[in-house]
Structure formats: C-alpha cells, structure tokens
Image 1: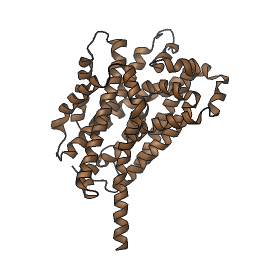
Image 2: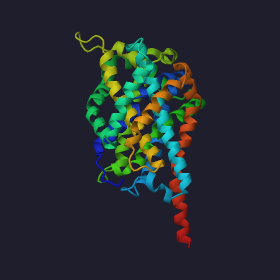
Image 3: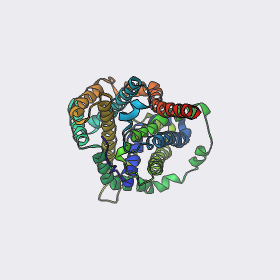
Image 4: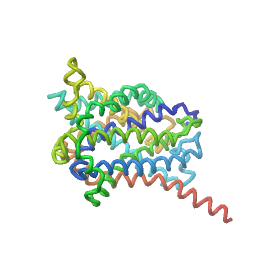
Length: 365
C-alpha cells in the first residue's frame, strides 16, 4: 500500500487540534475537577507535554520509512507473530475506544435531545456515517477535519471572550500553587493516554506529506487543543467551583447557559452542541479508520474496505454492552483504562528498541 502522502500540514494540524479537545471537553473536565480540584489545570498541561512528546517520538521513528506502513513492514523488524499480536492489540484498542466514545455520545445525546429513541438506532446511524467516511480513505477524514476546522476553532477560541467578567476573580491564586501532589500525579497519569493516542499518526506515515515538518505541526495542533481544554476547565472552576463542577455531568454544556449572542440568540445550546458534534464525529472517524486499517494489516489484507461495515457493527454492539449506565461506564474507565491504554501505547516502542539493538550488533560485527 505504498503511495505519495496527500495530507497537508493544515489538515494534520486541524485534525490534531480537534482530536485533542473534542471528547475531553465534554467527558473529562468534570471528573478532573472532582479528583484534582484546582490542580486540574496543571494536570492538563503536564499530560499534554508528556503525551504529545510520546506521540512525536514514535513518529520520528516511523518517518525513517516514509513510503511504507509500519503495519506492513513491522514484521521485518521484530518477530512476525509478535508484530501481528501488537497490531491486533492496537486494532482492538482503537475499536474499543471507538465504542466507548460512541457510548458516551448516546448517553449524552439521547436523554437530552432524542428522548424515547432506542440507543441502538442512534448508534447505528452514527456508525453507518463513520463507516461510509472510512470507506473513502484515511486522507478523506483529514480533508473533512480541515473543512470543519474553521467553524470549530472560531467558536472555541473566541468563546472565552464572552466570559471575561467571570475571569476577574481572586480564584486565580488557587491555580498558582499545588494542593495535592498525589492527586496531581494520579490525574496527570490518567490524562497522558488521551494525548498518547496521537501515536496513531505513526501507523499512517505514507499518508502524510513529507515536505512539511509533521512533528512540529502535531505539537502546534496539540497545544492549541490543550489551550481550548484548559480554558474550558478554568471557566468551569470560576463559575461552579470544584465541588459543584464535579457533580455536573456535562459542565461545558451548563456554561452555555451564561452565553448570549445579543437579544436575537438567547439560548446557544443547540449551536454549540452542533459544532461540538462535528469535532466529536471527526475524532470517532479517525479512531475507527485507524483501527480498521490496523486490523486489516494484522490479517494481511490488501484493502480494509471489505471489513469496514462488519467492524462498525462490532463497535455498535460493543458500545451497547460496555456498561449498564453512564456511572458504571465512568467508574470502569476511571479505574483501569489509563493503565491499559499506556500499556498498549508503549508497545509501539518495541520496534525502535529492537531496531536499535540490531543496529548496535551490526556495528559491533
């Protein structure tokens, strides 16, 4: 599957930007407020640096063979069966993550906007659209992200301007000191995998344009997305405080109640949710696409398109049985997901380590 990369720097940066904050802004900041309180902002910053650093470090190795997919030539670097095992585990990781994101969306969207609608109907509709986009190719997802980037970016970049009055508060002092070192470490550890998911770019290197500084672009996109996430967290703390913010299921949505665009638009919920859903859809699409690609490479298939809708059906089924309710789902992921995710993400570095050992032996001989 060798080809010339068509993903431009703008497309790569746009997708990274949206990927970083699209789901975290909805599902992460409330638990973070409860666990880390005012230290949550520092947790986000530290995790973004560590997670993005891990991702760009992996990309540095993958860029050594810019015209080949690591999923295809990885078996020449390490044991063939170990390589396939890693690919299957990575594929499961992404498909499982896609089912989790899909479940989070149905748990949020159905009670709020589609009451009495069967969850399976919403899940099937969303995944059918995602699978159709996946069929169009990896680069299509990036082009879609570029097209939506302007609307998403403008909304969330300028949203804090409507809350400037709330930022004039002595509460700023609380963010300048560390209250609980143990909570700081625990929550930073839990957030790092959210950024570590960017390792996915290392598996699609042939899709990237090699004439651009891809690692630098990923850093810029990640830091820009972190800015959005950090500002949203600060606004939640200013308006609700750590105790009330921790009890809110979707504090980012609650903040829209304080946002009015003149007298002609008093309720911006629908507008903001619509734009947020676009970012959510982009993240779900790229995660499912990468998972499908890796699964096909693990099976040594020349094309992943024949299995796209079958895997989409599996994602829908898995999303429906992950947990009985949102509380159980949150407890499961808060207790074990970070460790599992970091374990899977660390498997990538088997390739550069083995490659380094082999090169040392070659030099010594």
